[in-house]
Length: 371
View 1 (cartoon, rainbow, N blue to C red):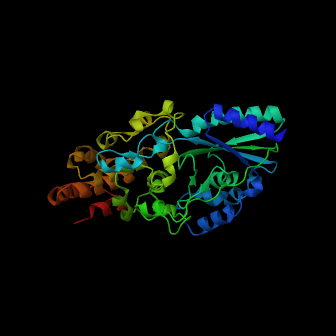
View 2 (tube, rainbow, N blue to C red; view 1 turned 60 degrees about the vertical axis):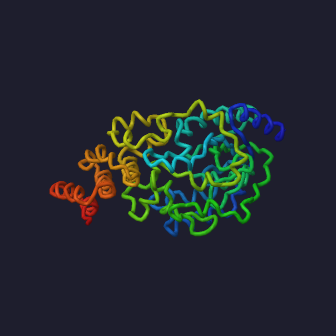
View 3 (cartoon, rainbow, N blue to C red; view 1 turned 45 degrees about the vertical axis):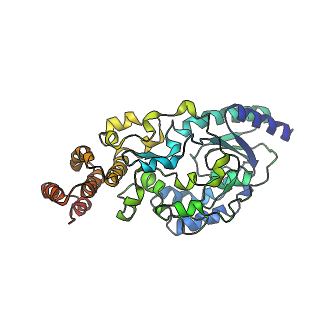
């Protein structure tokens, strides 16, 4: 009965667009909990305080739900049709991570998971819970334990069939389903994902320091971005695909057809000049229903101004100058930095003289205090 039910579940999931479905048990998470505790203890989680408060629950799925017997891990491909790294050679546009160039994946996947879970609950007369990156659950280690792939040296999941481009969903259930064998590591001696990182965010293979990661800095980090990382960020305004895109296993990944109906042209690497004009209302409208909106206008504009400062395009000063007096000190600071990067010394001194008279924020004043 268990295998027959599992086969029906897999068939239904594939009908709904999932490219891989595997099963594991809550006790197979292995040493992931200990690694997470070490990650947090070393402060590598940055200002993601929710990791500190949920570390014990993440270490054991049974802490989240004591009655769980089986964990179904599902992969939904978002493999891009083009090379995500090609946009890095276009400094006049803002590079947006591939996963964010469409409708929010939480919204795309969760409804489908509920359909599968509903079928399972009826057929097995069992309880179910669905999760899409919304609970203290370690999806990547569980996906590796279920055999969807393995956690590569960049700590992300890698699949031999789908490369690095999988959204993960989880269904926890009280039903007992036959588990699959865990994924085997096929990274070998390859270091491409480690060596390409512009900010050297990997202290060692299979280790990440989020505080140096461009994806973390441009999405999760709430404050000012340290100057040592700004030039390395280049034109990346939301996320970074470098370590994912360079993985050799991507050669087997086919461009996702399931994601095509959800692609949002306005998030597909838009011009920096256009992004610099967005006030809060325009930002919310422009990125409604996408992952970008959750970052908020001020943090996003911080990123856009860093990209503008790296662009070498002095014409962007037309859009940057109004942001020098923006209500947000986060934005004003990066407008000052971008001005320093783009203007000649005489023009920068003129701007500094004018705006230092009224600027009270010490961080913004420090950005203007350059020679």
